[in-house]
Image (tube, rainbow, N blue to C red; front, side):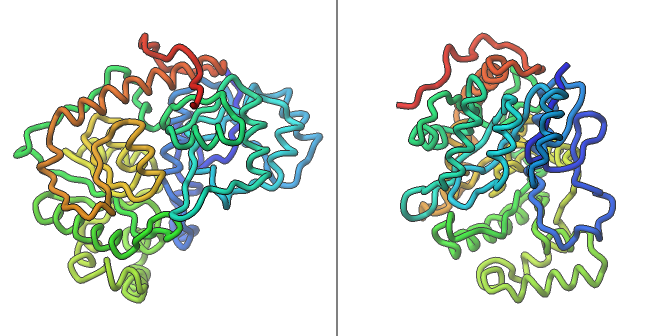
Length: 394
């Protein structure tokens, strides 16, 4: 089995292929630190799709070239987990020198581009160079959707496959389908929350937060709703903090102008105190998602964890990243900035999820083909629809 170097891991590994945050049991050590546990979902899912004997972390600090030379002999390839790497603020200062010296294949799967609200995406020259090094090291580079593929095409990278995200396939069941229960059987609903947002990517913060607030309230009114957070400090303190830290977090939310004006009212405060969920262990999220009849909301990977377990999910799109992801898998979605009214009943239509099932199956085949053509020792099962060739972007 393979010996794998990990570039940009997002948590500690236990039981061979499971991920949790570093020193996860020492809550106070990192309770003031924001980390998006969704990144750990991707890391955990990637490990679950691979066969490997040994994992190591690729050092990207000040290069020690003697060490890099030893790593070249000790490992077979590098894995770069999927994330939002392709944007104008991204940079790995020493990655170019390290990868040039290492000369191992870099398996980048599920990476994506983020478009700004205004203007064209302008990538730093060193990021373009890094992406070309990665693409040249393998048969193909795996991206989450058509927009990311086009961004790479525009900088001269043609060997691209649209593979979505490893999280979608973490169960490794090519026959997985989402089948809706009858609407009157829906009881348990997970709402994935993302209070923090950047105006660089979401063009109307007031609409984003007020719609978010009203969605949470409606779901809690009609269902047994669990609010699923993914790492914001205040939410984390409310779940795990001391009594003093909980009240400190509530006070901080009330003092935050955006939250206080458009999101965190008395009703949301009551729901935060009684129905908020957070964990630093990926398996805890998966266990919770499996117990839901529906998961919907603002978190790309929180929603995807549900779909990966056959639980219906609806996406609320608000930037290029969430839109691209929903388009890749044909996930039922509602545009937060459309000005329309969201009615859950309108989405309770099996034909919408049949479109998703077909797109998911096709993308499963693309992921299988991507790993196979890049000589990754993996566990995915051939389905007969794994794509004939590397995607060429027009």
